[in-house]
Length: 322
Ligand code: GLN
Image (cartoon, rainbow, N blue to C red; front, side, top):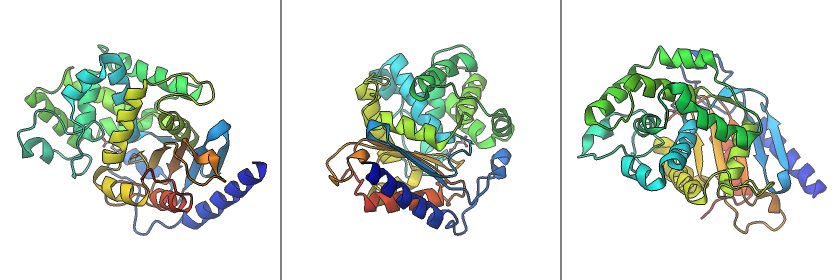
């Protein structure tokens, strides 16, 4: 296995070097001014698999804010607080086919609830449902879950938080719309504060890989065998990631990569590779977690180099769940 590890490491190093500047006309997100400081050519990946074996390459130490990937976590926490039945009553689990920050779909048909928790309208609704009277109280269980998964307590990047809060015209519009339709369960400002804070949690690709590993294993930490997320909740989270995690490019991602994943506008992607028999030479990949970072985005808001790299290794290693 040492040989395999060495081989995998070299392989990943080669492809990170190849893809790190293949960003076409992709650009870093600018609608949150603070995000513009990222280096568009950065590319990093960490894969954590069986036995804790870790392959890490490229910009693995660059911290970035978790952004929309937090929507998976807040939904999981809300399910753990309120129960799955309650949450599925409040937010639907259908892809929108629209941009992540679309308002249109809220008005398009007789909506009884926001389409899914991985687009802004659904995620803001989830933030309103989290228990707690203040945004910090609402955030606490998210931090506790992260601390359990990562072994340290991540922090909020205050500059990004303030930058988003002060430029959040679209999200406020969505918030007011949700308020009007009666979907919000907390005060609008507290809800939005919570949403901006959760998006501003700072992580690395190693952190994303570790979270992906636990999701891939149905909520169980494969090292300690501790159940961190109830199995049913982890499964719903992965179903949502597969169908809605890459916004209106989720169908293509499922087609070409084929694993549950979630992206964020700072350029992060988390992927959970559920175990299934693949290449017998590579048992390490069964139930692995992957974190990728590449801040140059395509027009949907997904990391360009990140998707190219994932697509490459998924086809080489037969990672698709299908
Ligand atoms: N904070 C971002 C926003 O709501 C998150 C969006 C994203 O990562 N796609 O605009």
